[in-house]
Image (cartoon, rainbow, N blue to C red; front, side, top):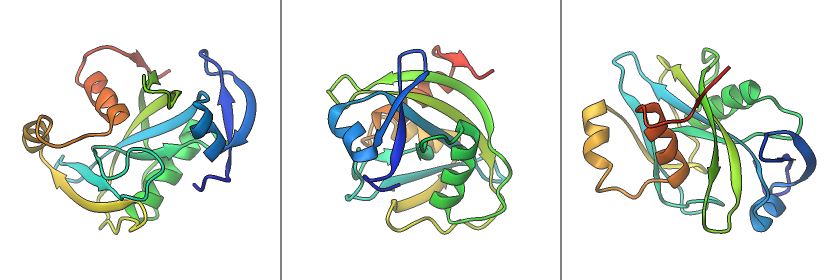
Length: 173
């Protein structure tokens, strides 16, 4: 999604209160919507990647989710499938299953975003977008845990991961 694409601006209760270009939403720290999809392969390993240096937010950091900003008028479910297929470079992925939602506050002026977390199993060979993904691998839960303290992770993905590990949050309806 480019900086010119239009996204819904929402309030702290996730109600749409307006629309603005993605770049403006980011620059002004307006509250918007995002999706995070944890992708597991047939062996139960999690897709982990390092974001490219050209990403608008959190360039060159590691993430254990694929995902992104929800477009104007797009549902969380639609965005989850679109983002997962785009970032993984696949088509025909099963519909991601909603797990939980939470309001993430960046705490650094970048604003807040409603974050819908999903899970999906991907048995297809992945071919991640080179514009989005600089490096990727499927890691076991143990390998992922080992890297939590050594790699620099995107803060919103790390918050989602901690919520999935049972440290709070709201379950998806």
